[in-house]
Each structure stands twice: as C-alpha cells, then as structure tokens.
Amino acid sequence: MNLIITTSEELQALLRSAIRQELDKIPDRPPDEKKYLNVSEAARFLGIPKSTLYQFTSQRRLEFTKVGRRLLFSRDTLEEFLRSRRKANRHEIAEQIVTRKVEKR
Image (cartoon, rainbow, N blue to C red; front, side, top):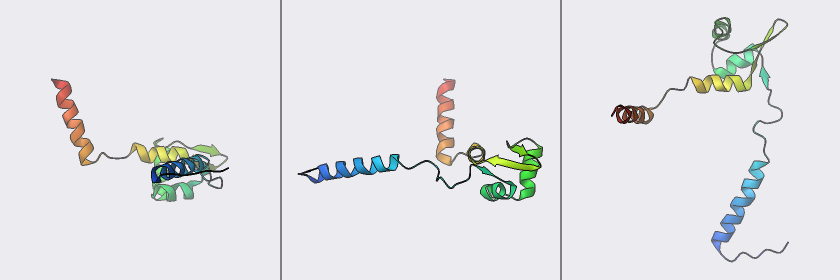
C-alpha cells in the first residue's frame, strides 16, 4: 500500500482512524477477568468488609447467585451497584435546582 501524506491534518486524521480501529478491537473486559466473584473478591471490589456484604445480601440490597453454599456476585451487578449509589456533585445539583424552577413556571 503506497500512501502519500501531504498535510499534518491528513496525518492526524489517518492516525486517529487507525487508533480508533485498534481500540474497537479491544474487548470491554480483559479475557482473564472473572465474570463472577466470591464473597471475599466482591467485598474487596466494593471496598467494604465481608460482614457488610453479607448484610446487603440478607437485606436483598445486592443481587447474588447461590451455588451450593457459595455466594457469587456478577461483576456487572457490582459495578451497577456502585454507579447507583453515586452522589451528584455541586454542579449537577445546581442544574437540577434550575431545571425544577423552570418546570414550575
């Protein structure tokens, strides 16, 4: 393949395109990363004690799978659990207040 680049913009566009194509080939999760975590792994992933994790499961605040006596947690479920507990920052709170005021008019 013969390629002649005449401008720096063409080179940048070509590089962006090549990088984007390569990044698209990378899976969302490394192949060696476990899809399901045991209690110890899930607690470490969430940054909480195992006792808190057991409380969440007994209160049904966190979805889990039971295989025999073992509890397993989907990594996707744990990630969603963390996202759902995210608190809004000051900028987002200010936007919500402005939106509510506009809607009341």
